[in-house]
Length: 566
Image (cartoon, rainbow, N blue to C red; front, side, top):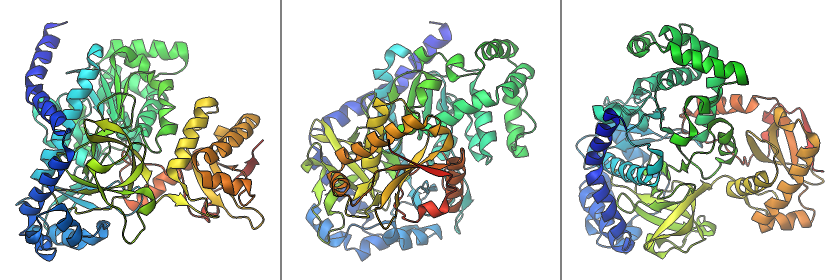
């Protein structure tokens, strides 16, 4: 170990000591989730009782969980939106006891128009605490790979896309936290936060590569694994430009980078002629350049989402990054962190009972006028529930639409995994097919058959004689038509394994077998980009839908042809 490395590791241990102690206390708290959660809820209510929202909902009279549920109903963002709108105009006490709103975090825009989530001191304290505990546990579990105190490759978003009427910035939370980090921590990230303000996607990825390729990167961190796939593809497609920039110490002039940002970045672009020559030789020999050619797999960890609809992108990572450990980031969104994963290779995480108060509604009861509502201590392993958080920053009994499943317990606190957005379902003949059923079936079949599928969506297809589901695939994924027919048959059967109602409708002939619906290669990229432009979402957080319930969806796509199962 070099002297510099030794000093950095020692500094890291000193910095992490209070976090390690905090983690031990959290583990103890997980033995009593009911008590911890009840006290947290009552503390939130006490702190916010003098706000306009608190007065309107009689917070001063609430002294128990039962009182809380009596005074407030489970509701979506739209219920609290009028109060948030008042905060955007400077009337903070409409919703918050906090004196300052640092930022409005913008949601990803995956499913609807973007929402504004107030980021207060309470928000940041919970956010940092969750990340710190996640990080300490991740480093500890991957100690043998010596990833601590080595550079991290992460692409953050724009911390300020616009400002509210009261001058409060609105933007990407990861970009904001990267901007306000202490200098020592900020220096651990290979990509400067300012890169998040580059709007052109190709330029943003290229600059991230240019900043990272000369460093001994230990972690590749991205909310969505599709970001990592695109990062790897641009490394290869733009390698000639990269070699030239490394050799000359430049940043290519043809990239769409705002002049002020280019002026900040250019002085950081040092020469690395020997590295350029080495990577060029590798590329000349193999015909391509992969992340594993730059960063040895033995010393890296991938941190990304692994649940829900991430399967198609996760299956592509080994081609580019090899097979380093993969650590799920946890169930987190602009609304806050919900879970903290404690192990590699699982999408399950321990419920963050210190940060938010959680309620759960059984999957089949979410549309009931009087659904069963459970606390964290009342859940059952293997069951699926809608997650209903209450936060310290203005979200109360918030129907975030996240469907989760309990996979086990840490102490007495549930470990949950994200299944998908619960509103994504389709029901032509009573099959009640959910996105979770689709992704589970796809993962199962893809694990048995080698047919590569990059991106897909399943959608209902109406036919008066026999409706069916279309698996929309790009033409490049259908080169081996015989293999595709076998894949479709297996996928159709697996859907029935995951959803007995689907199997029943297939057996009765009310539904026909799944067919492949081929669209031009590259069409999904265009579709996702257009969808994001309509919602104003963040590319890094965006989740491509694997089930689209619109029966007229086919009419909106450039369909080349259909292929039936073999």
